[in-house]
Amino acid sequence: PRVETNSTGIKAVLEQSLQSYDKLPMLEIIFEKFIRQLSTALRNLTSEPVEVTIEEHKSLRFAGFFDNFKNPISIVVFRAVEWENFGLLILENNMIFSFVDLLLGGKKNISQALPNDPERILTSIEQGLTRQIAELILNELSHAFDQITPTTFNFERLESNPNFVTIARPGDAVITLKLKIEIDEQVKYVDVILPYKT
Image 1 (tube, rainbow, N blue to C red):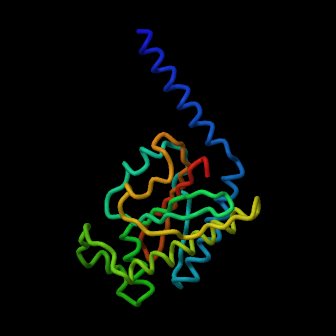
Image 2 (cartoon, helix red, strand yellow):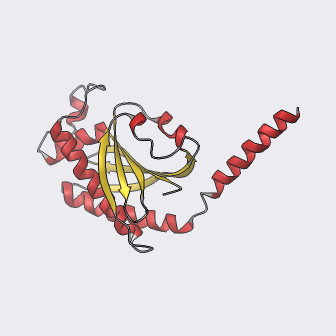
Image 3 (cartoon, rainbow, N blue to C red):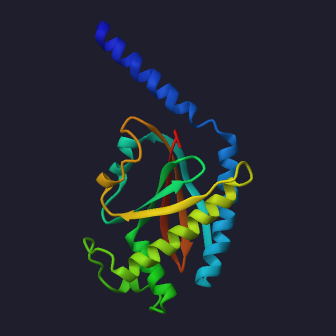
């Protein structure tokens, strides 16, 4: 019984410390500014009405983050230059396909009309567009953080396998931001992950 109590006690302490990461009021202000700027930037890029909202903002352990994702996804590793550390940007491949259609003159809602191979890897054109979208998002995130401290987020690389993006230890706490992007009558999601040590 004593071992169980001890384990439960340790778990409670760990969960308590994880909850304390939620209490970062300036981060909420930064994220609010970020989604306003990102809506405008995506509207200018696509010439379509775009609405970006925060779907979820929470803290969790890095090890459990990728359990909620289904392949295929595009994982952008970015460097926080002034902080000398890294973060992640998760883009659904379906979102990339939608942006390809919008920007390269494809039919509207083509993703609903054509079957999508869930295992298909991105072509070089789609990877280039993924980088362009990621850099746009990171640029707006940098500007949002500038109100507190000069911050530069630089695109490092694009991955599709979560095993190659270990920017934190499994037990490290991370702050996650899930963005809901409504564009061209479709709803897409983007996730931003910042390890607490970053």
